[in-house]
Amino acid sequence: MPIVKFQNYSGIKNEQHTPRAIADVDLKNGYAVTIDYVDGDEVAKLPTADTAKGDIYFVNNTITTPELKNYEDFVIKKGKPVRAFNFANSAREIVEISGDLVTGNNIAKGDILVAGTDGGYTKVEAATGYKVSLKVVDFNNVGGSGYDCVIVVG
Picture (cartoon, rainbow, N blue to C red):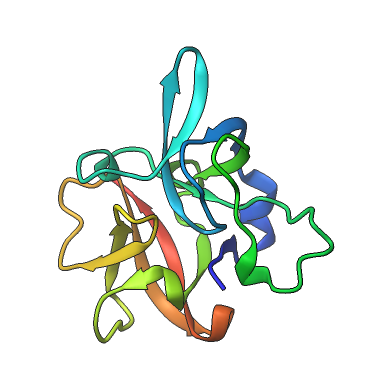
């Protein structure tokens, strides 16, 4: 069950998201995306190796399909609106990330995650050159097994 969400009310209260972005490809909640401007429109795209080092947003759309039986089946189709939350505007807040979005072996407290090119988050040794990274501070049961991460900017 892919998801990224704020752990505390302060993150929710102070968040800033763009409601105007349009999906460039099919996306799922929790995916890391970048926002590009194409013909005056905001477009949510999966990061490239280069754009992953800049402003990163996470997708968190409201599920508006009551007939959906399984949360994991929810997809934001290409061309549909995306609620994209800017990590950089929420420095030092804690987000909960489901484990299915994280790539890396033996994730431990203190590990660093950055946006991957598949929409997930990848463990790295150091966040050198990345504007946004996530530091694992605890474990949770979001999506079966997940991580509490503090947003680090700079």
